[in-house]
Image (cartoon, rainbow, N blue to C red; front, side, top):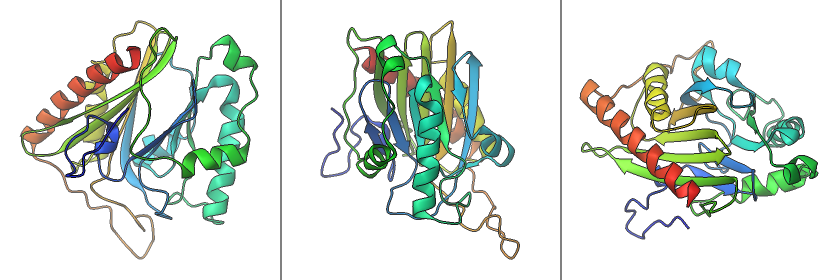
Length: 259
């Protein structure tokens, strides 16, 4: 079980990055929130990289074209992919009838290989998905033991004081890493961070990494009357340190997912 001390010290979890929350709804269903549910609208810079076959992923066109995300990141069995995509759309409409790209659109859903019992099970109802999102927090169970699927988490701090937190989902030979950092990075640098993370995912089938930064919100970035897309960027030596931290945190996360 991940823990955060009262003094705010690193507790070796992706939720050490301020504002990031996680909920685990049983085998095969995990959600990562890039910012708390109490925030109605927010975009963050992000990037995605993959190798091999990792299943179906929605919402990548906006992430790739604009380098931003605002949706919860949901990982689920592939058989539930369409249903949970619709559930996130419904939840986003409840939060914001305009359903803008500041408020959870398009949904980021990973449809991953499922075990037979998951493939036959009914997907959670929209109300259950909403409860899962509302219940996301800093503490969540990790591990998998002898199970074919597991989640693990870890965090590392650079000498300059920035955090990289990782949540790894391992299902058979497919491994997914979600990375959060509080360092100011552009989408290009986040893409390089995701590439570094792939080095820590040791699988011959498929691996993917999605990285985002909480350091700079982008409210109103696409308004015609405003220009808030100016990007702060950590210096090159700090970006190198963040890459090393990401690789180490991914390796630790995979180990904890298998324990």
